[in-house]
Amino acid sequence: MEDNGNRFASHATTVDSFKKVRESLVEIMRIPTISSASHNVIANCFVSKDGIQHEESDDDGEHGA
Image 1 (cartoon, rainbow, N blue to C red):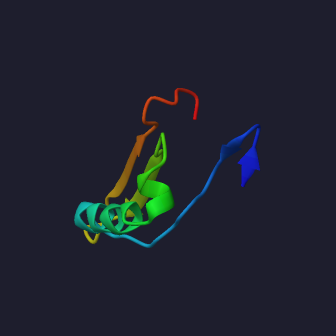
Image 2: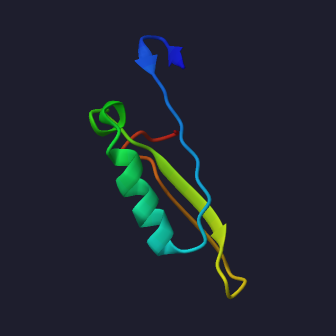
């Protein structure tokens, strides 16, 4: 998607642990257009095998993103 001269891309995957989150981020960051981006905003939400819901996000300095 492009808006006001900025390009936006999104990716989604299924995870059930922080280890899977890290592994997924490593794979996504191997995509050249993603790894060369100025800002990479991430968010994840999953329920671990013990039934606990985990949420995490990082706006990479893009406040309000």
